[in-house]
Image (cartoon, rainbow, N blue to C red; front, side, top):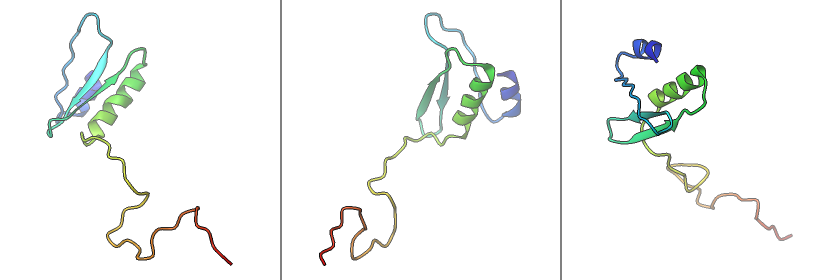
Length: 88
């Protein structure tokens, strides 16, 4: 973690030992959201990967889309599905 802290001076990196809890990384974002990642039994490379992912994340929740595609101009005829039945 010291190398990660030196490479990212814009971040505040704090390490503390809490007895009785698994080690975890916690990302606090400006929009007051937080993400917590458990790093129990992970190697140093995996912990660095999770720390980098927390740094690159936006800090907002993942929003599930209601449709498979998002467009400003939806089709007038409707969207195509595999359930269409054509009568000949």
